[in-house]
Image 1 (cartoon, rainbow, N blue to C red):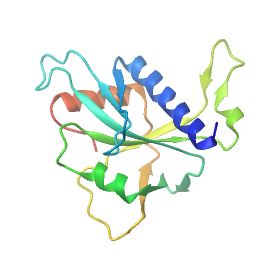
Image 2 (cartoon, helix red, strand yellow):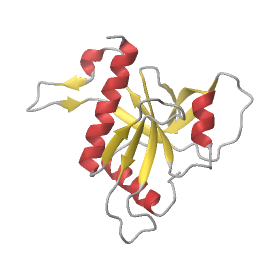
Image 3 (cartoon, helix red, strand yellow):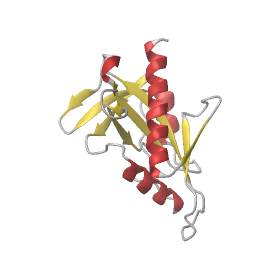
Length: 167
């Protein structure tokens, strides 16, 4: 398997495991036309504006995170940037970037009582960001504090149930 495909499949598994733990279902799309790789769906939320809220995520996995001060920078294709910054969407969208070591033998620890995913995933909302004059990629800053966890996913879903996204 190509390394890029291996990274993609690993991240899908990572997000599905995290989503399941948070209590959400995941669905994927046959074709990624608008920078959505997975949709996460919550159930319940009867006291909210939307009973079964969803959030969309664009997944990226990289071994080349450029660390700067209190965050990382990630080069994102313009098409993805434009799709993710749109305010004309029915549910919140997030860019989710998994930081993987170059050495794929470091992705999972199989020596414990089960398996342990050894990597961190970060998120950022691009909603409402300005247009860019760049033609190929744009540098996205992701704060180190925006680690994707089950609690963060639950907060994202709660906000989506009230027709909002978190920044």
